[in-house]
Image 1 (tube, rainbow, N blue to C red):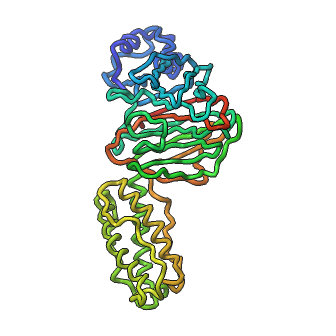
Image 2: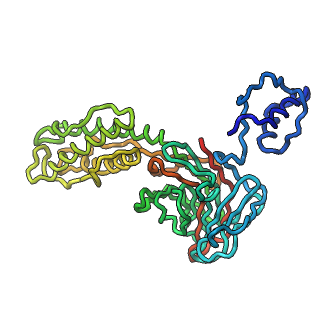
Image 3: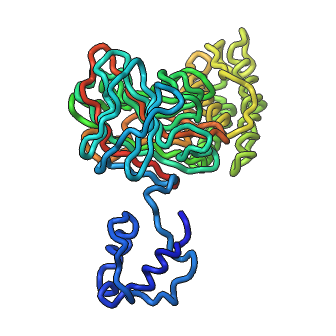
Length: 415
């Protein structure tokens, strides 16, 4: 947002007594949405207005995009790739990548954008707000920027959607297969089932069913907020629980009747930073490697009997927040399985990790309502630090065909 402009200063200088008595909120709203820049004079004493003391939020500010499709969205011509078309409304620009041999473009209708295109299996649209060029707007740096996307989309026949999703993806070339992106997180209506899906470092797509479904003609609303500060805070909470639960597990002689596993306890540092978090997880990896190895010995030193063995997926020490979060999620799964092993332990399941898995992303959804709530089942995800991401919407028909797919609302915000 820019400081107060000379034009706005001039308008403020010309406010009159009548405007002073009017609601100031109406005056500001008129300036913000551009509906009125004709203001009377003398409403305020401009001598008290200092440079930079008033900031106007411009709808075209790329840190803040709101689109309700109340005004026409029109094609702005072909770009370098014949499958890519530009579109714009009075406030925003969009780049549409045609999936398949689609011939019907995005179609603006009052208060909505029809993105269904041809009613053909395997065809659809991938829309990037602002485009993907090096100088395109709406690009955000993970680990630095706190951002959100909120979207509302309806589907005539939910069984006809291969995918109908919105979220953020790594800044790279358009792809007809969203699962081919190197990194991505989105809320996806897959044949009516509302999923949270994510990809990290070109890995397999993680799919979490939120247990919410839409039916024909309904719309799904959703919001994703990405904030690495929240990611670090939630990771530290998980690490603190890990320290307390795992160390208590190790020294419990009721669970370990062959002898106390005190030698396997680890760093009691109370983590308060990323450096602390890395140190805690690194120490845990080393100690758990030894502790789990004892559980699979023919004659364990600590454990009651030979257990199943629940090794971590990786013992590579983390160096970044996303790596820490990935490790903590895996640790929770593997350690809980170890703790629950009633063969290796006399009791089992005494010191389970219960904290919600750490995540830089928070998700809220709503079905046929603009009111958003946390779904019954959520997922955890964190982009790599320094990754540049763009907001996108993607839809593809399956053989059943989805009928009209209507984008009704879109908001992207750098928070």
